[in-house]
Each structure stands twice: as structure tokens, then as C-alpha cells.
Length: 113
Image (cartoon, rainbow, N blue to C red; front, side, top):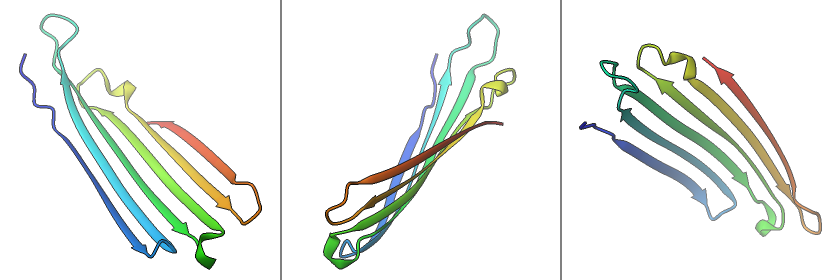
């Protein structure tokens, strides 16, 4: 079976001498899998991963704060497989100070569509 499975990704980063930075990224992939049974439809699956990150490091980088968000969307277009469609979000923040340990907090929110 022939299939067209494109994948595209991109990253855009704005930075001012590493004191302040903003990163945006997106990655998209589309796959077509053969059917599990004779006469069934081709299984079409789209996956999109997008993220944003903001970083501040005042005072020459002795301390820094970073926060980000990552979204993953798994979309099944084929009739009968929509129940497997999911969307998950992950938020993260990291603080680091001079002489202090690195503090990290993270939260993941899975959701069905």
C-alpha cells in the first residue's frame, strides 16, 4: 500500500543576549496506516505538537526563571477511530538562583476530545 506521510517542523527563537528569550515551536506529522481487516478504511492519524517557552535571566545569569507550555494533539480522522483522539497539555516552570537549588514544578493535563 502506498501512503503519503508528511512531517513538518519549525522553531522560532527571539533572544536579547540570553537575558530574555522567547521560543515557539510546532511539529506536525500525518500518517496513514493500512486497515486491520479486509475492506476497512485506511487509518489516518494527525499529530501536532506545539510549545512556547519564556526565559528571563537578569543580573548576568546568576538567577533565572523559565516557564513553558507544551500541547500535543493526536487526531484520528478515520470513522470508527475518533474515540482514540486525545489532547494533552503540560505546563512547566523552573527557578534557579545564586546559591540556591533549582526548583521545578510541572503539571500535565490529559484530555479526551
